[in-house]
Length: 525
Image 1 (cartoon, rainbow, N blue to C red):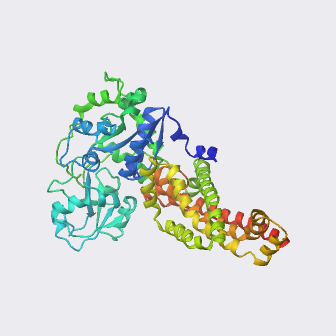
Image 2: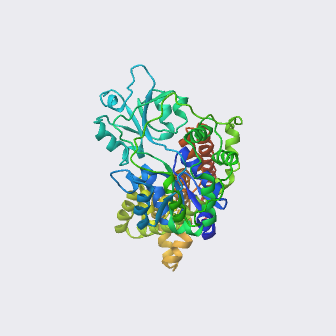
Image 3: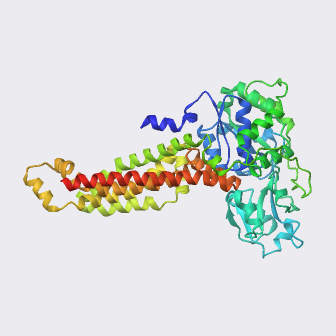
C-alpha cells in the first residue's frame, strides 16, 4: 500500500528538485512551465487551485515557488490597504518564511468586460447605473478582498453576481447568458470575442505585476536553479508576449510545456547578473526594476496592438488528446487513488458494519455518522483537510475518497450479516463453533454478495469522485478535466471524462463477476 502511495507522489517525495506550483487558469499554467523549464532541475504541479490553496501548499512545503501578482499579495495575502513596493512586501512576507522576487515584466490587472454593443457602458461608473445587466464573475473574484466586495463598494454596484469558472465565462458572455464578466488584461480572448473593457474611472484596481512568490528556505537550497530563473525570466516577458502565449494555449490548443519551450528558445538567457546566489539577494538586486507603487491600472484599449501567436500545428483531434502520452500516468494515478481509498474504506467499513449488526444499539449511530460524512461537499472537505493535514496532493484526496466510500460499505456489511438466516446461526452454535468461527466460516461467506455490492458501489462512485483530486495536485483524469475547464476546451474535457467513464464501467464489470463468484459459493453452502 505504501509503495502504491509513493507512485502517486514522485515529485512530492523528491527534496532535491525545485517544486513549482501554479493556479488553475491558463496564464498561471504557462508561467509555471516557464519557471520549471528555466530552472532545469524542477517539477511542476500545475493547476492546484485558487490563491488560498496554492498559498497553503507553499507554506506547508508541498511546493517551493509559484507565479503570483503584486496586487494579490498586497490585498489578498497580506491584507494591506494600499499598494506597496517589493521591499515592503518582502519585509511583511519574511515572518511567514516567504519571499517575493524576480518581477517577470508585465502587469496583468483585473478588469470587467462587456459585449461591444452600441448601448453597452464604457466605464464602471456607467455600469453601476445599469441594473439590468447580469454579472457572471469567477468564484475567486467574488470572494477576494481586492475583487467584487471592494469594487461593489467603490462604485455602488448593487447587482448580485453569478459564480462562473473563468474558463467558460467568455462563452457565457458571447451566448448572452451573462452581460458582464471579470477578465485579466492579458487574456487572449478579449480580442477574439471583440469585448469592450470597461474603464476603471475611479482607479480601484491596483497593479498586478507578475512576480515569483517563494519559500525562503527552498530558495536558499536551490541557488543554481534560482539564478537560471532570474537570467531567463527577470523583466523579460512583455504583456504582448503573455497575450500571445495565452492565445497559443486557448485559441490554438498548444500544450503549456510546448508554449514555454518555444518562448524560451526565442529568448536566450541574459548575461549572468552579479547578484548573490540566494533568493533574498537576488530580490534585493532586482527591487528597483519593479517599483510597485500605487500607479493607477488602466485597462487595455480594445484596439490595442497585441502580439500574435506564432504559427502552430493543427489543433489535435479528440482521439489524439484521448491517447496522448499522459494517458498511462494519469490512469495509474487514478486507479491507485481509487484502489487505496476503497481498500481503506473496506478495512474500516466492513468491521463497522459487522459491529452494527451484532450490536443493534450501535447501528443507528454508526449509520448516522457515515451518512453525515457523505453529505459534506467534496471541495469543502478538501478545503478543511488541507490545513489540517498541512499538505496538498494524494493525502487529502485519499481521506476525501475514503470518507465517501464508507457509507455503502458499512450499510451493506450490516445488511448482509443481518440477512443470514437465524437457523443457520443456531445450527453453527449447536455444532460448537465459536463466534469468530461462525462469523468467518458461515456469516461472511453468506453475506459476501451483499458486501461486494456495497464495495462495488463505493468503487464506481470513487472513480468519478477521484477527478476532484486534480484540484489539489493529486493527479488522475481530473488533470485533463480541470485544464479543459480552464481553457474552455471541450475535447480536453472529454479526453478526461471518457477514460473516467470507461474505468467506471470496467470497475462495475469486474465487481459483477466477483459477485457471481460469491453467489455461486453461497449456493454451494
